[in-house]
Image (cartoon, rainbow, N blue to C red; front, side, top):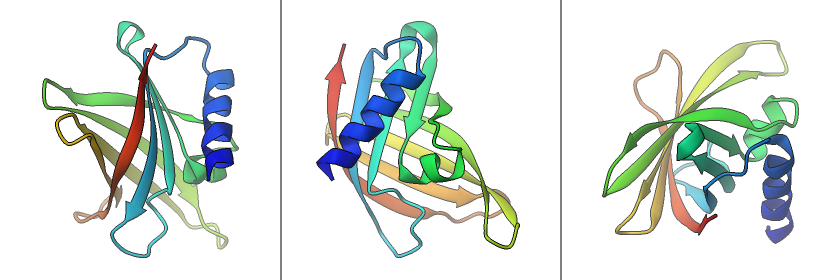
Length: 135
């Protein structure tokens, strides 16, 4: 697990020209068995550049081993919510777009995450903790 987290961080560091001001390195658990919530998640957030970079094993699998650009949906004294879209294709060639929302709850130091297939109302939920580093 530590090796996977280090690899994700290194990939994001190499793939992003600007260094993120805040990094979230998270260990997550899914509240189910769909495998759409990653066990580890890396988010780099540079507010000055209005930039968010997201990487996890699911993103790397479906996005040609590259992290994705995301965006901040909400940021206030209580939380920051990141959103990103991941285009997927199964072995039969069927495609789908997964919409992810990850919310860092500052008081609880907890990450809540939801993955929802585009066109569906309910999503898959997960939660976990993160190491947060300010640069």
